[in-house]
Image (tube, rainbow, N blue to C red; front, side):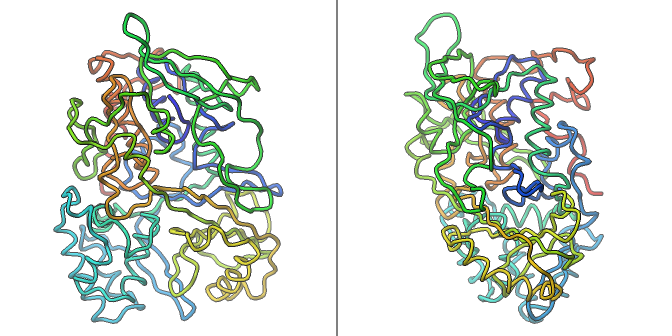
Length: 536
């Protein structure tokens, strides 16, 4: 495995659970990928705010297998306070079946007129009739679709953007209609509990990186850190492993997370690819690892660079049925699928997080959305960070092209007054710390045309698979998409190695914390616990 983010750790965990001898290689000095934490002034700070929904069954299944279900807080029902300088509104679902469960919330949304709300209902019905798998939707902008269905500028900014900008990390009007329809139909128009929000109650580094490292160690997997992969090569024909993975030099040092400097300013160009050497401080340059199968769980540009000659995507992942994780195609591949040259065409989109620590509490809300404000979403991170007095609020800014290069001092001048407009108690509070973290390539830029460039997990080389939320999972580039991509890669790898389903067995099914089969299911083919997406 190459890459220690959610996709890579999902791969290794799934294969290790069923008895495969697996090595995970990661360039960074820790696991977790883009979801990580760092220490600042005695506090544990997440590099960005990540949330999930109840419909994210693959991600929730991963949390369960990591033993971290109790480390997140899940709403009993979708409930979001929407703040504005002129007041607030509340969007809360009812116990009615979907899509009727959101009707009362929409009709009570005070930031839109009654006529605007009625037009929203009609547009939602039109979106419910869309099939996100149709290629023509990949070529369309969400804003054009909404405008054609009666959604004026204010309605798009004050309601639709609340969900699509944060989910797709692109300006609302510019979003890919296929992916936007997937989000809206699955989360807001599907099962009544699908959009219930889950928020980590511990630092991300604990939730993902440390938990994954502990589980993989118990499973006997090898985790190599702090060096990078220089090349993946196909061995000449004959007996023995199919691939050689060549390690480059060691990436050094701990410290703040990738692309974040100690003063909160962004750094760019941190290596995202690769493998390492057990975190033991060794230089892996020149070392070669031979393997029967390889999963490239790295960003698209890195995958294109590392892919051996002859690699070409062979089929895409299907979207699966409602409430079920995606599955790969038939394993034989389809002609005309995107290859490494197309992967490099996939652009990325940034996320910026503004972190503000006050000397006193300024709100009782665990999180809130905002309209008519530069603030998009704000989260109370006081408890998870370890702050003992005052309050720590993190502002998450998606589609942050306009902020990613703005100095922290200028962001302070813009966002502190904006926070005071939303939280009047902040006017009397003293700011004890203010800093900014930036993810310049946080996600795939999910605009029209991006879907045709996303490859499936399978490639033309048996035993070589792709993973990462940028691949074709049937979902947007999210934590859920990352986990699904890892599971898709495991299926493809097993097919490429000609291993029949059920052939693997766990190394030690009686050892605590080492599940072999979950609820009687093959852990490779069943990424989530039974009933994970059921209505509460």
